[in-house]
Image (cartoon, rainbow, N blue to C red; front, side, top):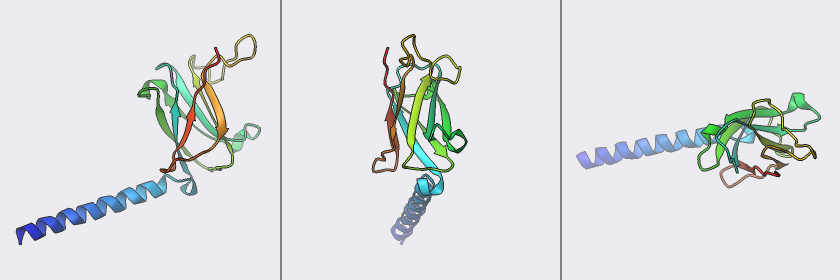
Length: 136
């Protein structure tokens, strides 16, 4: 009888935990206004990774988030964009190393900080990934 009660308790905890995880996963979806983004290629641990989704000609409708570069592990950090998530929009990211909130350009107009942009592609977990590129 003890074994049955323990088994039932473990099963109840597993069901509760599973339902909780499913509810949390459902909240982190574009339909719920959230998009988890993984930023790779972070070479420095100083500055801030700036992430945005939308049309840069309509800044009022873009959603964005900032992540300290120091939070990156093995060159990767994550954030969650919250707001109107348009999976057809462009995803942007750059590493703002000097804290001026702008993507700095070198003398020839080439980005001086790591940056990337492109369409949103989701992995099997619904996470978008973008990799910073460096041109200097």
